[in-house]
Amino acid sequence: MSVEYGLGALPSPEDERDYQLAEVYAALGIEPVASAALPMPFRVAGPWPPVLKQGNTPTCVSHATSSHKAYQDFRDRGFFPQLDEFEFARRINTTAAGAYVRWAMAELVRTGYPEAGGANAAAHRSKAFYAIPTNPDGLQAAVVDFGPIVIAGPWYRSWFNPGPGGVLPAPDTKIGGHALEVDGYNAVGIEGPNSWGPHWGDHGRFTLPWRHVGGLWEAWKAIDVPPPPIAWRIHLAHGAQIRRYVLDAAGRITGWTDELWQFAASSAPCEEPVKRRTANGRSTALTVRVIRGKYAGQILAASRLGVTVKAI
Image 1 (cartoon, rainbow, N blue to C red):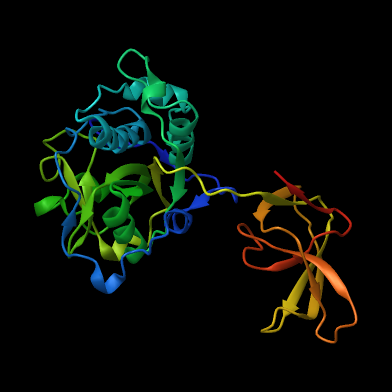
Image 2 (image 1 turned 90 degrees about the vertical axis):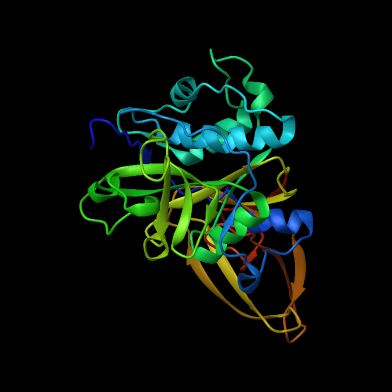
């Protein structure tokens, strides 16, 4: 690691409860910008927050989140707040190894981002956070439709010294993880401010070439759009008897497969239970369609040993 430039991102643990950005589009009743219609190049409208400087501390997650929130707050209030990146780093349990971006997003929703001195965090809260697909089309559409996002992924020794325009060169030795804000893209790749001061890269900015985007761990967006209402959850105990139904075009049951849930107890959002008739019309079964998680989009039996469905 560079003596001058700190890193500090860790891959966020997966959580099936995370909202996906597709649910924002559904909640707002809009369609993502089609890939053929995406503008090239694109950068969110300024003014932009000043480039931050984390020094050699492992606080890239809190700094990238600060830039993310400051841009949003400027749009809401007309000025950039003085946020306290190091206090926020403490609140998201940043260690010498770093922190998780997902925890930073959750903290924005739970208590907000504190101002200098640790005060007034509630004035800088978000309504919800959403996971973004890390493919080029998903990243571009998210930035065009909703503004800056935060990414995290591996960092390589060669990337401490970007080329002209802040373009990150071919990766060599992986030395850690780094979180960055993305506020645009161009023909070369996605771009945004780093948190290493205005003298690094292109006036403090980077461009991650498209050919390296596939190596990203994750991408997130905190937004002032409430999460979509989810009224039902399916709960699976360890050892639960899972029955997955096969349906015909009319939604009737034509077959099923059985398996055991061999993992720890878990739950996922689902649609309201409905009775479905078998194709031969001789019997019915109470079923649910799972919304997220391992069985997303699949039809499961709503009541078997270790399986319960509840309204929330």
